[in-house]
Image (cartoon, rainbow, N blue to C red):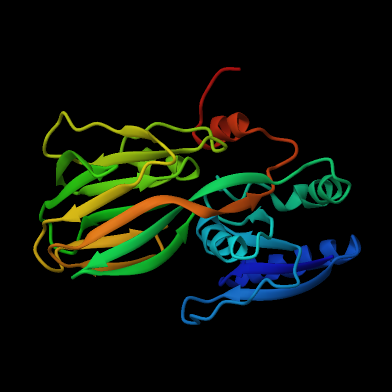
Length: 275
């Protein structure tokens, strides 16, 4: 089996990745390493690989997930970040987790992704497939953005405020949670809409079926609104731009921590008491 190590560009994490490589090789995996430097736009191909091992935080995992989804390669996240909702395995748990994976005692989870396109002046530009979220928000100046939300071509609301988040179930524990959205079990298939600091206080999060198509119509003046994809890619929006979001045909295959459930991770990360 061939594995690619996808590593956060940080000296401490690169050193950790060397130890991870030794563990993988101990289990008979042939490994290659890619350090995910933002200054390097080109990413490696996963053709011929059977496992992607991310060493870093959730941001590095998101970048790796977009890469892995193109070839349906499963992803295992080793946490070297601060939060670790996606990079579920700690370095001390790696050997036990690998043994469970290689012996077939744990299977990868199939996580829904979002497909995003931009409609501008009659032309459609496909932007990509994203595991967490698609966000329209205010730019550098502290002005409200004005966005119409259409669901299945029906006008639902106009958002005045800091913006709106369109999230997958996996992304519900990211920006959407900070903006007051609900936590969705990650194996669910839904699309979540969460207004960000809406001026109209009656605007509330809205949970939709996964086969619905969402359009965000930007009425904010040119370059006063910004489109962010998975918190890592983005672009300025022009007045009249339309962001089209729907369930992607691709998905992320993600190995969970064999010893900890989603609920135990929630309790740990969010400091829930009791039990």
